Image (cartoon, rainbow, N blue to C red; front, side):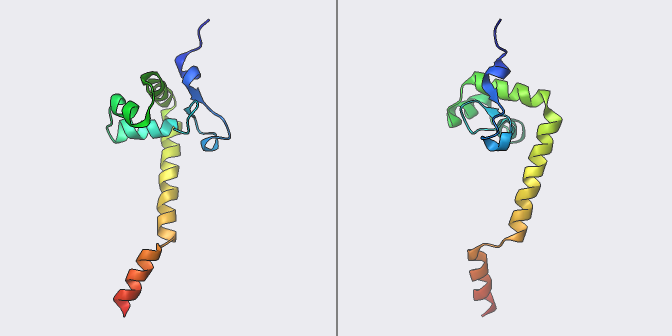
Length: 104
């Protein structure tokens, strides 16, 4: 019996991307593929060329995404909220220097 393509191409190793589903043998998460294709409008061919992935890997990731859309969209939202919080709570060295120069 053949192994379904999604199981062949998608892994859940806890040592890669904190256990997020990702393309086997890479550190590219399913949510990355979803963001690039669904939100940013990259074509499957563009993703394949830019990240050296096979079409089978990309379509498997998209299939996994659409089968688990609610969970992965939640993970994307949490990642975006975390990044926003980090930006708000830590200012850059450059921003501090510019503020010091402006106040002089």
